[in-house]
Image (cartoon, rainbow, N blue to C red; front, top):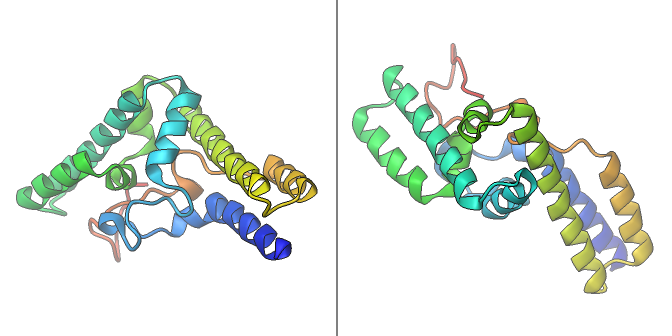
Length: 184
């Protein structure tokens, strides 16, 4: 049983490290607003702490970035004004969607920080959330102290993604296909 739990926690760490890049982008995708293995809300809350800004300030920057992406999609004629209005309303209400639509550069700009600082804050947030899960597994008796120490050692060496996993954005399907310019 402990081996199974250890494998599950290790899998979680791997998912949080590289799995988020495969999350569905279109309107939240299957499973709702999640960044593979971590709820976007929890990630944003922890990242706000790491960046020393309020959660509301970080959330507003993410929504503003998403709105700018939607506006650009209208300008590029990838979506019409009615679709844009619907997406803007949904992004304002759904942090997961806003996160997927947003871009690292514009979120950082909204916050008045560098993309490097934004990425560092999100890396630290991901690490803190993983550490909390490991500690909770020890507290629940699902992991031994030795197994937790091993996982924490592996986590210390892991390259966690910053704001957006694998250097790739989560566009919303605007013009995807041959010749797609991307918005990552």
